[in-house]
Image (cartoon, helix red, strand yellow):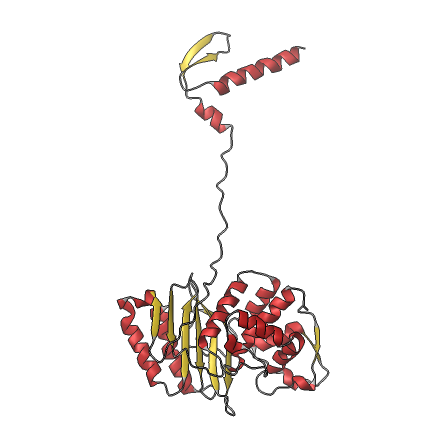
Length: 337
């Protein structure tokens, strides 16, 4: 019973302390007498209660604003911030370089936040060669996300998959078994034609064509061939906006695609730059009637990356074309974006 009374007494004392306010407060001293003191008890109360930690909202990823279709001829057209007078001299310099280039060229550059864009000769339709592999690999990854296959699926190399040109899978004997992971990774990283054809054989063309058409990129359809014969630079920009947003989902397959196309060999558009990452797909062909030296992808510059798409009918890589590309990208990267 004594113990109970002690507990009650202690509880009452605590109650007096906690309910005291900022005025003359009655305090019980050790000798049982009472005294009045001016005391701010707010510190007593608040010190016994932990402050709620600041809630920090996770930073939302910057998603690409899908670009609109802008048709323009061979006069450089700009939107958004690039309309400011401070950029006029550099735009005029870029116009002069494009006018002096002996090949047919289409150029589209787009900031992923939609704040600015630059276009030249966007109505041109030029063979994009292997640039289409980026669209097909995106489609394949999304198919696997939905349960249609996975990166471990075995693919048997058959004669129908043979395609000369880029890549090294063509040198394997027929009957060699590759995984889907190998086929798609080589298709993007070293532009392997056999890997690409094996993936198209597995996932088909009709589904891809519907997928790419719904995105508003009809020029990247591949039926009846496996190539997009009449590619538009603006369709490549739309595609890479979609790929950029796919990267932000941060899944097994989006990470796979990023690793397969970032800082790879055969970099044409941004070869003159250093210290910047580039997720892209290039394409070239120097034989027959379907000539191409082209590139498209995401330049990871600062907090706001931009997308560049260059299509030309140049007959494959050459020092002359590389020099023109360097002039273009240096103005774009250093002065405009």
